[in-house]
Image (cartoon, rainbow, N blue to C red):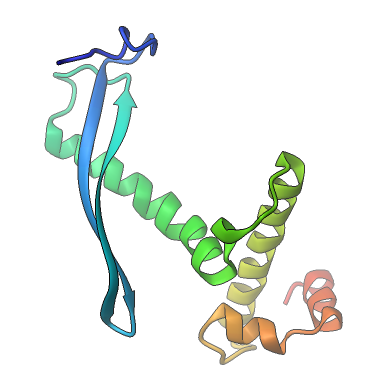
Length: 139
């Protein structure tokens, strides 16, 4: 049965988009988990404004920039999705701190001040004093 966004209570939206995804979690080049799922999107673009291929590019661009960028790094590297913090303010504060950790690591990497390739190794070598110096001196 076809349902338009307005009937679903999403006034101002013109299209629902369903995307079928096949995903794999890799470890050392081997598939350790695989899954399939539908993801659903809604847009205010009218149906003849962009074709399906262009809409798919927009969706890929979103995931490439947001989800696969900072969120993926915060989750995989710093375990964000496994966090038990549930309060909105505390969760926002932790996101800020995780972004700070990633930013400091990238700053040190870009300046050639660390040869460590990944954040977890870098974190294990970082003391509170060193972290404060990085923040106050900018790298």
